[in-house]
Image (tube, rainbow, N blue to C red; front, side):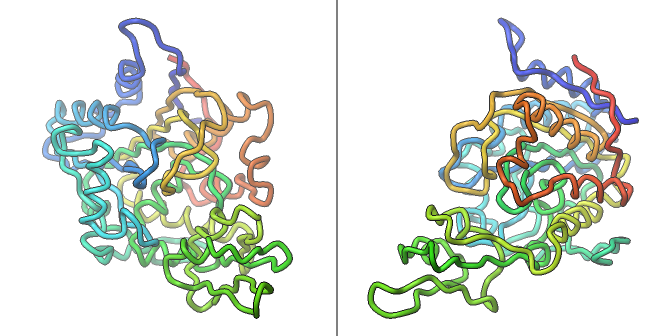
Length: 358
């Protein structure tokens, strides 16, 4: 049974959340995985331009401080996006990160885009997955000696929730890897609900949507050959006329994300630590250029060496706070338990855990 350490969101004078993070860092044994001159990747999400809910840089700088004290060489990282917005290439990505306060001076470590200038710097890692036997992992993540994962738990329109496994698997897959994970997800237009407002067209990153028909009878139509399954049209359709659907089984995309996490963590099983922030939990992920008000009150921060245990504990705490299965209620077609069951099956960790409250 894995240990998951937890600090709640309540604070008092001279003991705030940064201090509490320090207690978690010590308790989870971050120092134990860092050796002298280790290249240590701190995986976080810099937020899309316009968003405000991402984990702020002062938490990252506290982790950087600890790694440097152990004579490691930290860098703060994420990989590029499949869609063409503020993090599509390394130049825009670093500028977006800087606009949100993530710089060398503020973080105390370099900001490095893990899959290179245009998302083509990756290493094919062999795994033993049920769906894939090779995955395309961002090169900086593969070449790092140790991994510190900083996750902001949110809802997610494609997987029900976005947590540590998605942060690692989808987050550190190269652009081609992200395409592979999205390849079985395609949206479909409900013509009766479509109002031909064209918002989906403006937000589609690959120009896969057009309006068809005559006069006022036009409706949106999606070209499946161009569609990359990113889900932007689904979220931006306020009429609820576009729904995501898996072309095969509902849990296939979740299994692929788990398998990409397997690729990232391969060889680093004893050199990885996970921190999950249950603060400002929003209905959609930080990839959007806006942030909703929190969908639930702040809960706290967790830390563990076990990615599956910290995921299960995070969801249990959210459900306890909400008094219901929070993410299943938010996205009723998504069974989030499939992701954790498969991750446990593939040996990433255990869903059985002991919650240690600090």
